[in-house]
Length: 151
Image (cartoon, rainbow, N blue to C red; front, side):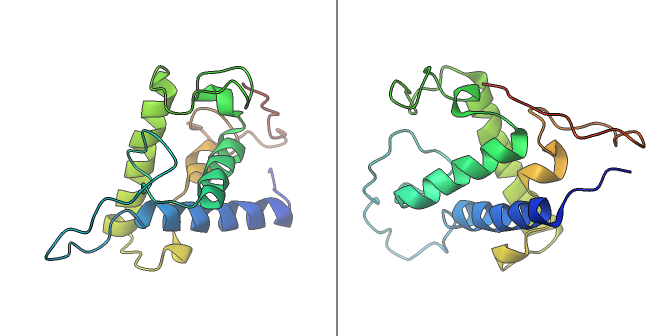
């Protein structure tokens, strides 16, 4: 049976808590008078909050990258961080990621009644386990985790 090191579990748990908190931050209670739109240095954020701090956005992206075993170019157009067009919606993987973030938030909030998002039950890693596409079956006894170097 495969066993991940304690370090892998700690990283997955910390990443999951951070992602859930960042995604949940976009869903504040509706005020009587809507506040002015948050100014953002980022373009085309549709799921994550417009005013997310740069460090938090990078952390969310790194968590997703490690959970899926992929690099930025899996969802974003470009060949390097310098040439990356992060705002582009040209890759279908980016829209899939948005749908998955919405699903994860819904599962945690509605199915598990998670109020404190440091207690998230479901994360990207829950299904992906370091693979670009969700795993559909458990590994066979004796199998080693696959190395994924997708771009």
